[in-house]
Image 1 (cartoon, rainbow, N blue to C red):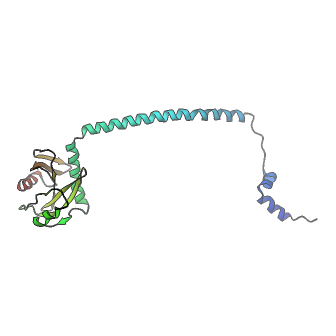
Image 2 (image 1 turned 180 degrees about the horizontal axis):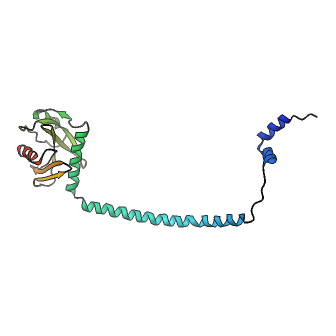
Image 3 (image 1 turned 135 degrees about the vertical axis):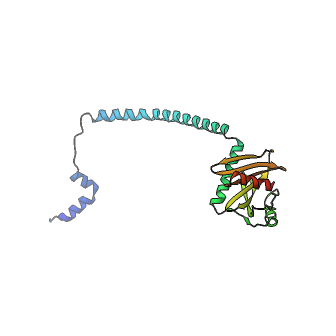
Length: 210
């Protein structure tokens, strides 16, 4: 009977069992292989428990460190410092973004009514000689709405933020990162004037507004 060598070769190459039987090579294992495997297994089975304990200890130390740092920050940052940072951030956002004005108008009789129904208080909107009104918008500080009245001085922008005051405060001047801020309270309202104007001009603005 004639043998089809080509068919046999194809079968061997496609059948895993036949291929391993005809092509696989067998080697004698080293004498100490079993010892090395058992030693490695003992080391691997002992390691996870130690690693878990080490991980738990590291986690406890990390939590304690983070908690301590949070407490330290809370003791160092006063509510007033927090408001100061929020007010300056709102001023910077208005200059670098596209949300400077919700109601662009130089007419206080247009800007003031715009806030009606949007706020639960009525912000004083005034005409100031030398400091033209540009309009207004709504901001949020610590989750509560505030009015932002926007005035100009040459090419400078003045944001005047106001909302109902929790406590009365004396006028305070703050300078930070090239910006001047004046904070005061009157008639149950708190006011923050922020600008890159020099302090003398910003004080003049506040004096005219008050």
